[in-house]
Image (cartoon, rainbow, N blue to C red; front, side):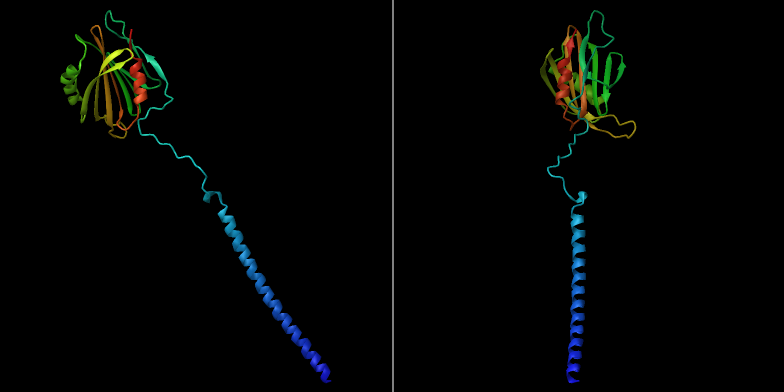
Length: 222
């Protein structure tokens, strides 16, 4: 009888130990599962495309307002009206720009840029002195906030020209009312009693050196 009681006690102890081990094992398994789930979630988030920066991404190119595109095309312009006994002139202007004509003055515009071509009779060739003493005072009364006039003589393919550079405010935009600070280049070409004034303008921060050179170099008497 005594032997039987000890056996029962031993068996009961094994059952209790087994239950404890089973419980601990289940707890460890649950903890491991939770850790695995968290790891999986973190891994998935780190691979989301929106959080991964593109390697060697090119910087976005921005151009100052008024820059004329490098691929701008140019077409030859010849005025339909001229002077008696005068064959006229030709000059290349940017293709597609709006054109307005008033007398012997033709203006081409696009956004913030402008090309004005004026033909006048002249008894003598323009010179630095005449432009400084006559043209500059006139422009002071015509161009809002006229400033920084500078007169030089430059060479173009057709010959020499008197260049007047200056700054001034543009006319207010008819829609927004916005006023832009413009830089002006006025070239005076002369031949046999006839003068053509070619004035190019655009925002002061625009880089239009090459387009303006294309236009002024293309000027030719006919």
